[in-house]
Image 1 (cartoon, one colour):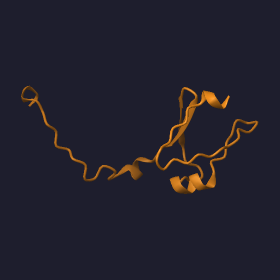
Image 2 (image 1 turned 90 degrees about the vertical axis):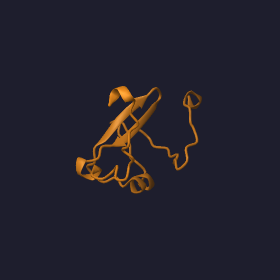
Image 3 (image 1 turned 180 degrees about the vertical axis):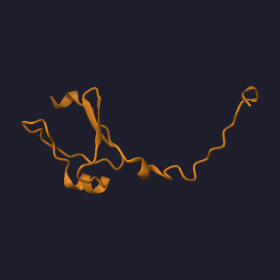
Length: 82
């Protein structure tokens, strides 16, 4: 069964094993929770990609303030678009 999953080496990635409970619950390992700054009650979006599952924290809008500070907003436009 393991060979049907594709694993790739990603810098900074951490490979851990968890078990799914009888209620289809999992526990996110402490090391990952701490490194990601996850807190109790946080909402996660779950995304299925083929045979892979990703959990993505949904951040409150307040925490996103200033996330793009310093980004280059200069846009090269075509002459007919000005």
